[in-house]
Image (cartoon, rainbow, N blue to C red; front, side):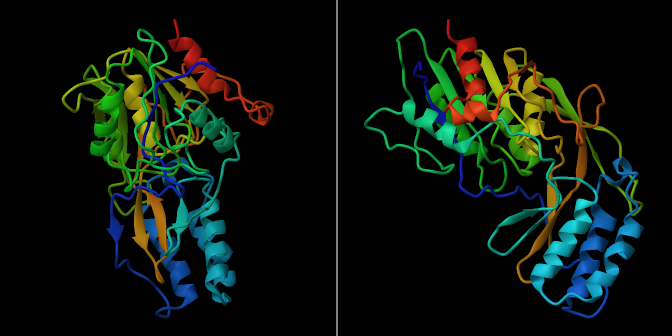
Length: 352
């Protein structure tokens, strides 16, 4: 396999969800500190805050309360409460709806079950094959790597950068510093296939600025504006803009898949507006709706989308996702053989 210049960016073992706010004292109903009261609290927070009810007309939220109420009155442990709340949230089939415990572990209420075109073990072997013998090899999980830049030939350099988290652990300013290493590359592979969970919209917006050459419409966002479940505001434009002292203007191949989720999908929309960027891989998750985290008890929290995202043509991205410019088929057999067809296709596209 041909060597590729590397810029490995912002990876972690346990991806943390981006949180744009935190409510510490939401209203509750029932006996203080009871498991039943917390069940009602989760239902009530959803009722007042969830921005996607208008797109979930087949789910009667009042009926959901009654459906699980009897079980909630008989709860005896935190584990039972967690399972019950996840079942209730799962009725909405929104992967962004989740619970998180005091240790930061995320519990999805629902997973679309789609095949993910990225495999950690195979990816790590690619990273190791691109690392010089004197460099510290990657470990066994996504990590924050040192900067690694290789030049296979004086006139043929391809950069590689991945982002696995656009949440609170991610710093776009640090990312800008790291991407200085690929400034002289003739092209770049930008990998967002492992960028799951929600992330924060502001990180997507500023990160785009390193690669944006034109001020163009990226997407629309719409917030819930009132107490009614379908009280939605106006469509607000979000534009791709230059950011930083320089921009990478050479060809970029952007890698996406079913685990590209939340703010990462907003970053994809912003980057797709740029003429020098081609998206390959698979359709994204369809959950481009950054969340707000609301505190429960004992260090637990519930993550609820505060807004919805529309593509420039007015398509609601919820559940449908963003299709790539070029679909690259991937199978379990590829991973079993140690092959990543998406990376291989990107290298082929960018190698003269």
